[in-house]
Image: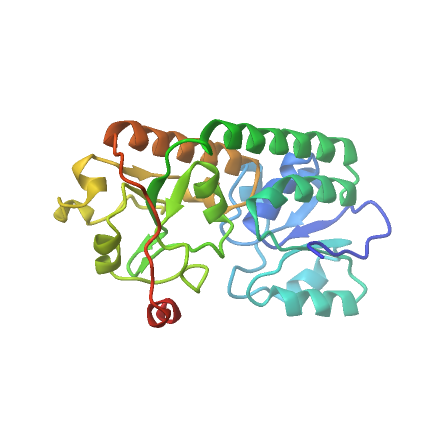
Length: 279
């Protein structure tokens, strides 16, 4: 089950323990009922004024209890699953979010809308998200595939595999992620991996537009100037702004497709079993 909750009434005092959940609460029209959030929850502007009770690595259970919430929104990541169990033991209602696929965004908006007492808004936003994803699929999935390296960070060099829902956006746009077969959702790798795969496009999705790929002019992405920057907040938080990010990504890959005019088949790198286990 993707989401779980023990709610009995419309919540009035809400705590959101992830930036994407904070953003979704505002989108659903319940932002005025948020009483606390976590570090980096900075969108929309009103979210910046909320008290902070922790971050990805640590959440203060004592701070949550002292605020007397009637609903805590939890991201099933890191230590938050055990935190959810502790909150339920204290009879605090919990909503657990575990987005594993891009396609879960419409359902999450509808489900959270129901829980927040905003069902009409939830259904409207859910329908909008579903429609946008369908349109992008129709527009780009029949186009020639474009090989992509997605750079999530540069020191150390980190990417995403097919185990991350971010990969869904690449495939939706007709892209082929060169790290798709890696075992870890967010694998570490060396520059040699990228040089060997020779992607047609490099997407840099990090707060600093920093990379060193220009020193490798033999790379297709460098040769054809197909190195692009994607806003990580929009790309890595599953919200309505993710749709904007995926649309931008599709445009980048389509631009690459038209610039390279390559007739050769594109595909992900074939790893040995030993290589897969190391990523």
